[in-house]
Length: 70
Image (tube, one colour):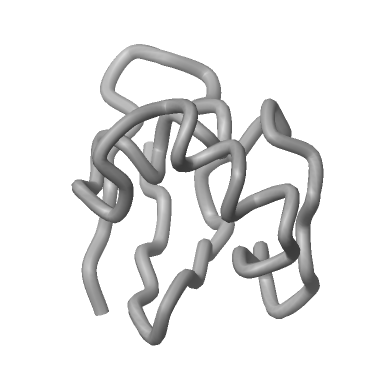
């Protein structure tokens, strides 16, 4: 499974994570797929575009998953 490192940041916003992972072409596109319920966090559908994702959480979209690490 892929991982995403937060580096020195305490969290990453869900819409930014999709963009940084290359799962969406833009922040606007990321917000649309999140609002449509196509993204899950730790197995639950997440529709909050700016939901804070912390180390230890797993985000899934379109058959791909990434686990966030500190």
